[in-house]
Length: 315
Picture 1 (cartoon, rainbow, N blue to C red):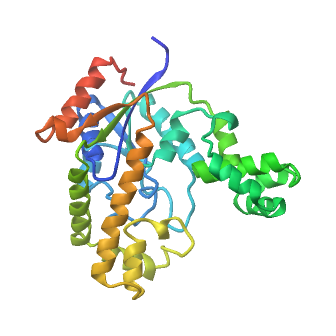
Picture 2: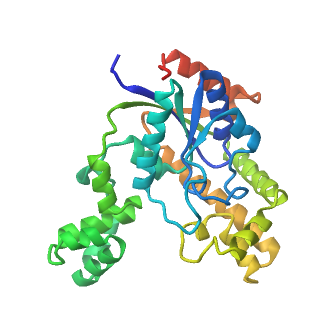
Picture 3: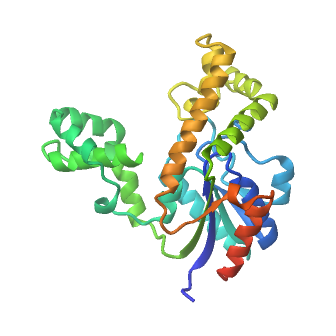
């Protein structure tokens, strides 16, 4: 017994079936679902982010959904703070926290205590930055991370470049990274399951089908509503969300409807590839290949069995 609270994490690419699995786990083991999706935090963006249905929300309590307006920004450090509060709340109710989603950066922020030195490095990025004018680098840092720019003199080339490297490599500013270093991640014991497919084409077929279903469920009307009511604004993260930006191009007469749909499917497949690459780095995760388990429901049954075998504590 290590005294830590158990937390289940179910990750994977978009359309992999992770949400259905997480719902089954919560139902079987007395859990509550904590979303780890960078777009589901936004209100009114329902169809395009595949939010849970009313029936699913009644079946299992969900957290970190609909907590921001689409024109508000939401960072990985924000997610870390919200998620920890949600985890503690679930545990206090004697329930099992089940984190589910495909935003790897958010999961990293939550699960892994990092410091400046062991934050991901990219030699090519660093060398490119070192070739830039030092003042231009400092101005760039001032734009993306004003707090760090205020504390780092532009003549301190190494530290300025390192701060920029952190941002370009992880998507987090140095300020956010420092906040994560100070955070206490030691009180949770994460049990990570990643749902994947050995045959990538099966996943791509699922993605294409999901896009078709979203369109049938009114994705285009949802986008029109968001635009007409000033909720989806240029320059924001939500405006650039996959599924929204492609159809906005169609509404702006920059692409035909058919071109927009094809681009949406292509962008989603590419995003799934990036998610697979991200999750492949999780050496402490248990990878479950849905296409090797066969019958529907087998993934959920397998994960539930593995959780029980681990002796996970509930509450």
